[in-house]
Amino acid sequence: MNLSFNVENFIKEFENSCNKVQRKTFEKSEVITSYIQKRNQFCILISGNADLVRYDLNGNRTIIDHFTNNDVFGEVFYDVTTNNELLVEAKSKCEVLIYSYQNIHYKCKQNCKFHQKLTECLPELILDKVTSLNMRVELLTKRSTRDKLLGYFNLLSTRNLSKTFKLPFSLTDLADYLSVDRSAMMRELKLLKEENFIKKDGKTITLLYK
Amino acid sequence: MNLSFNVENFIKEFENSCNKVQRKTFEKSEVITSYIQKRNQFCILISGNADLVRYDLNGNRTIIDHFTNNDVFGEVFYDVTTNNELLVEAKSKCEVLIYSYQNIHYKCKQNCKFHQKLTECLPELILDKVTSLNMRVELLTKRSTRDKLLGYFNLLSTRNLSKTFKLPFSLTDLADYLSVDRSAMMRELKLLKEENFIKKDGKTITLLYK
DNA sequence: GTTTTTCTGTTGCAAAAGCAACAAAACGTT
DNA sequence: AACGTTTTGTTGCTTTTGCAACAGAAAAAC
Image (cartoon, rainbow over all chains, first blue to last red; front, side, top):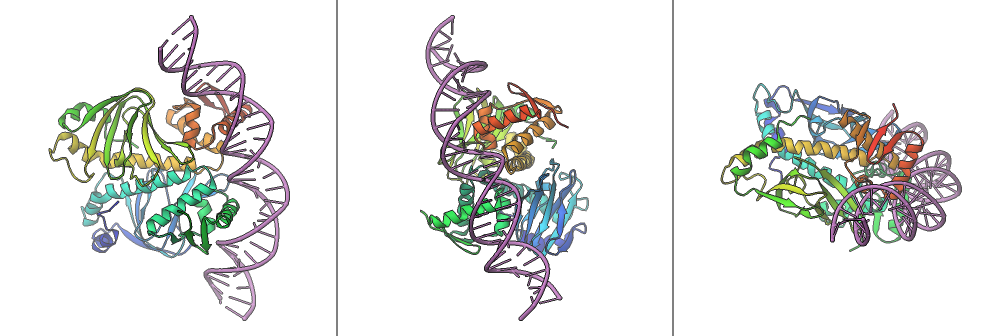
């Protein structure tokens, strides 16, 4: 998908056109925001990287989404219906633009450039989320840990236009992202190496098949 | 979420305002459409019900989404990147409105009411998809078959505002929707009954806890 | 109303995944 | 460089899940 919405330019041009938009800084491990029902935050990650995580009653952590430079997040993209807490956690030092809508359909009363442009571009930002969600569903519906790993590796390989790529996660986090047990995943990773499906050097993976 | 877009009225008012919009009928088990890369179909299911399914290389079937009256689907809501075939299969006799965009951003040259209204409402239709996808991810990230079942039952219970509700799927299809083995799911279902978590009579389930 | 097909319910066995625990390595901080 | 902390890699054991197969019930087709 080609977004006509260039986040970087958008920030440069319009950040200061609305005084209700705040720029905040977060240190590693800080909670950037937690998703709250009936609120509509819209956030842009200017720098750093962060995860949207959910903790369930059994103490399992799931990484729902992973954000890097210029990614957008907030309740605007996530109708909160769950009982479980949804947090956005900074994985490194992060700079974030935050704006809270009363209602996503209302335009900003000041009719500022920021919101004019945003209203215009929101549909494609949302469409982009749909794409990444569909991909996520596709990964999660794979039946085995092996298929999930290979599915995810294929994705990264396609994105990088290369059989070699670097994992954006620690292996611990990767397990939480694929929603599998870490030790079981490590075992499978080892088998994939032994059976010459992949080569692995730290977080750098190379696909050896096809 | 409250959609201001009322599909039923939309169809009544605007169906005939654009001569490129087709109304088609499909019999049970027929393929309504298959998702094709770089195409942008927009479909409305007027009556009947249908599933969006994916068959993977191991022959596993996954039900990605389930559509009933007034649901919308098509590539417009699904950026096709997968190698696997994505089909929309009629589960009963279906009536469908179909329109194929050259590009989702171009407006219909005829500038008809159908597309005017659709362009206006597409963002919230897409936002609605995001919501259902987020819910789906939440279900699929549950670690056990039991948690998936209970998660799904809770959802149906909440939607119906009642501890008792009817499954919209056959049990065979439910397994494909939750992405688990049918016999394993049946076993778990039996345990849930025995441990008095649920009562089950055909496709009617009653939650007995809390 | 009979036949055919699909769906449900069940089981034994095999395979995969989860859990718990620990040591070694890597990373960050002072 | 030394410390504490997090991550990686591994393993033995248990539990869960998947697979294959089959019989009976229900639904659909003729």
